[in-house]
Length: 179
Image 1: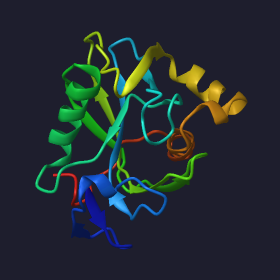
Image 2 (image 1 turned 135 degrees about the vertical axis):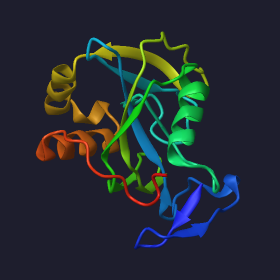
Image 3 (image 1 turned 60 degrees about the horizontal axis):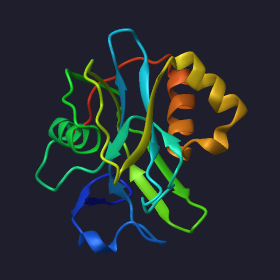
Image 4 (image 1 turned 45 degrees about the horizontal axis):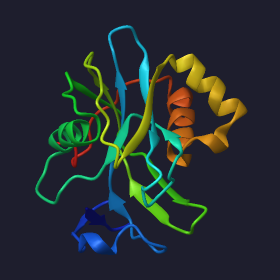
């Protein structure tokens, strides 16, 4: 995990056992939406053993780069670790996305969290420590789900997809931390 100041500059890495917690510091993460050739997006349901938002449906996978790891490598690492697959390309769609959310159990997520679209036609083999279910869906159906049951989804996914809808879903330039 890479801690950040309010301007988004790196401050180093804390010991892993200290985060997330009830006062998590701002840090760098990412959220990735995995698409297959037919345009369907992979949603995942977080394992019940996860520290934050257990059992909640969310985007395909999320993660945090290591201190000396570039973002595309971190995305590839998490695609493999959480879903057992490789990706065929990455587009940065919300490079400056930032959110803070407090879960029902009091755990805090506070992230600068670039949002990415990645592509793969492989069949996921979820790591049960991270993912309890997967479902390929149409984006229109995800939009409908956000309207009728946002509480069933991760707060970052709801915010991200609302921002993407407002921006017209366009790929933007890459910030300095996306190497």
